Image (tube, rainbow, N blue to C red; front, top):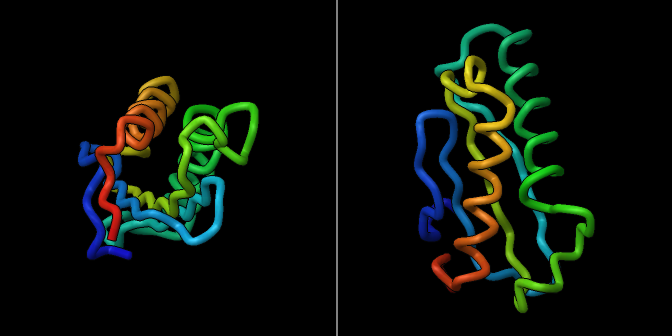
Length: 107
């Protein structure tokens, strides 16, 4: 999966995507080892999951409007802990927009 093309690189996260064999959009959240402490890692994980629900998946989790299924891996960085939640949602919306434009790798 990590050999796929990066869709978004930012201070709070890195997102990789590739075409999926099944329709719809699947999202996985992982946290960098640079986020020290279990409490901090879990807080970043919860924030990114909720931002993905709000900005990436939207109201429907099948993402039929993208036209093709994608597997997306979002890797949280330490800056995601201090970012405003609205910025995290905006980053997820950017990922969705880039997927819709076909900018993700099709490996």
